[in-house]
Length: 299
Image (cartoon, rainbow, N blue to C red):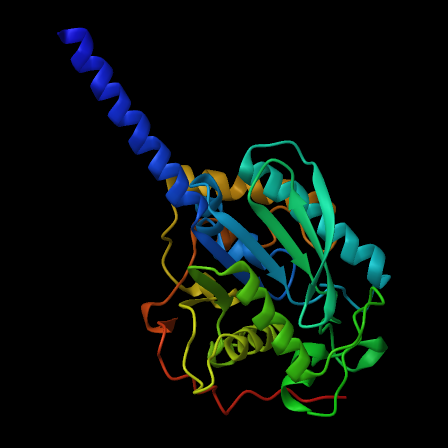
């Protein structure tokens, strides 16, 4: 009798485990970030937790992340390599990826799928803001210009077809239609109000474009969207400890050697912080009204 009871109990455990795995596989998250490293610094350990739970995980990089002081594509691709290494570490698998070009709203987009996992990285290669007006810098960047200047055309640095503001938003919306996420993440749409210096222009512009992609015909939030604080997170108390702080650092340690613009401790404050203010969580049906005070001087 004891053997039968144990066998029955074991069967229940196996069924429960199967259901849990199935539920995890049907949970999808899409995280939109401006640059390669914003996800690792400001959204982790949340994304890493999704991966450990077996979720379908998409991360969309809204710019190439290049800087005006380095050759654009070589540096952008170094950052791509860093992200690949970081996500392989997060998933605890070999750093083996499959390139897959996917089409969203009529635009071909570069994506990379981590073999043997549910992780996909999407790279838009949109021109990033970098520096001031001297020495070839661009303090606004293409994301800001697509938001503010309706005739503006953004040309990805990898040579793929150009975007206007509406077609870029349509492309992001099409990613959401395809991925069907349970919730999405973005930077802060009010990061320019952070003190003392405000957040990076690309962080804010990218968050605003993401919000525009996440509305229905009545301009109400379509899919739950959580906003994350960027550079200003240094001014908040520490809230990441123990296992997840260690994992966040382990994952970061795979990225930074690929990026000559950062060092291991360049953003040390972020290791023990991940700030997602309760007041910046937009639930489905919430009316979306963008802030009217976000301006950046051009050259």
